Image (cartoon, rainbow, N blue to C red; front, side, top):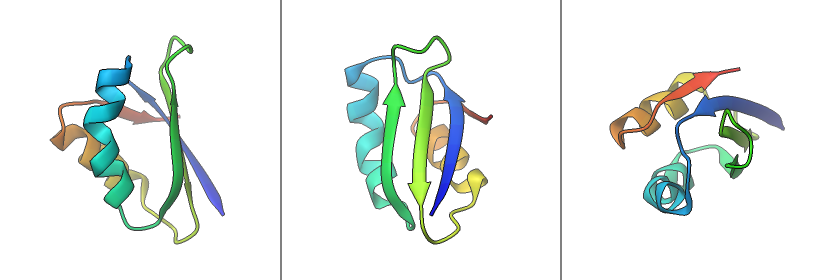
Length: 70
């Protein structure tokens, strides 16, 4: 299992609701969460199939959110 972490601009429950369908349907995502209490709004994605970091970044960008690998 691999853990990917991203700094995002996902800042509230509404934002999380907006990206949930996208992140839930990405191939290889087994679990994900956003720490909205952290000033960097850290998205943690767990994958067991070698999901590419760029796939997460592009998927969020298509929904209007930014993600930067940390």
